[in-house]
Image 1 (cartoon, rainbow over the protein chains, first blue to last red):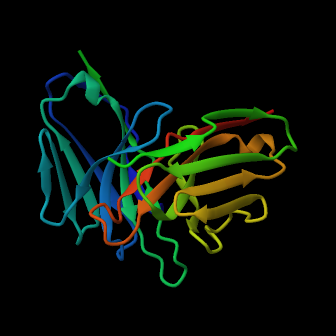
Image 2 (tube, helix red, strand yellow):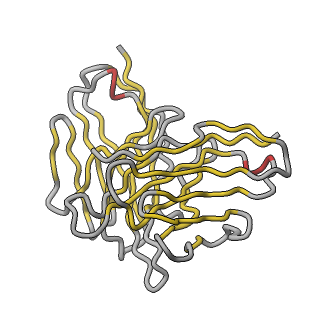
Length: 114
Length: 119
């Protein structure tokens, strides 16, 4: 089972629509959760952290369900500039080894159409 | 926000040569830097964790003798791909985490990546 799973898409969505992505993670000991955005051939950029209580930043809302081990991202009133790959990211803490890098999903490709 | 640079941004080399990639935190000190690799249409995969002044911790399946990591200062980590082969062609991205106690601690800031092509 993959550590972080996402539907790769692509999601083709008309401008102005609302779109939602889900992501599941396998490591129940995961501590931190993020959504990153990656444009073609660029580095990922942090979009928002995901908290248990849910959080909202403008048109973006992220939610975490620890019991079911999934994370969601909702984008309202989508813009052409939202077209990108959205990466679900989990910080999996490793005991003893000191390695606590981020575990990335493969990403969900979003295309906003005019 | 914090800035991380990588150099070079792109490199093309012949099979068998070694390539060094630098990762620098420009406006903050990073006790920990991470090296990732991304193949086309794949997710970023953590290769190793680099702590200043100590040996890097490698992920399973990553050869430490092939991917040499040096984290000599709080602002610089280097990754050397030794005896590169075509299958090492990939997008290498570093990230840096600020020192403990700062407001941005635990957030990782990514460099722009280095695209390596081995002929």
